[in-house]
Amino acid sequence: MAAPRKYPDELRERATRMAVEARRDPATRPGALARIGNQLGINHETLRNWVTQAEVDAGERPGTTGQAQRLAELEGENRELRRANAVLKSASAFFTAELDRPQSR
Image (tube, rainbow, N blue to C red; front, side, top):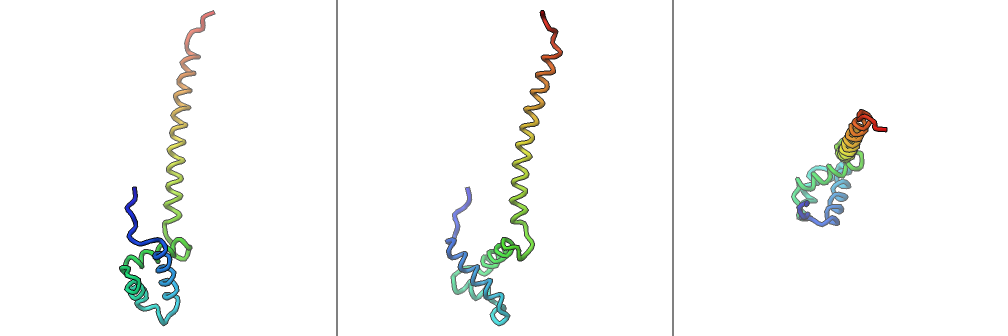
């Protein structure tokens, strides 16, 4: 089970939006994360992580959000295929044994 979040989602979204907008303007870019973090009572490193993740999610920055999700899907598919393969192997062994058994007429 995941740990409860320290900050509500609304605050996280608002802070991220404010930081992204402030970083776009060259006049407010220097120290934007620290300033916004202080205004909202959020550690500036936490805010930096949120902004980085938002940029990755938006495709503005290379990252692993989609890759991690795809990897999880492929691992699940791999587990399912291994299970199906095991069932097919045991069925094959069963029918091979049935065919090798002498037939009584």
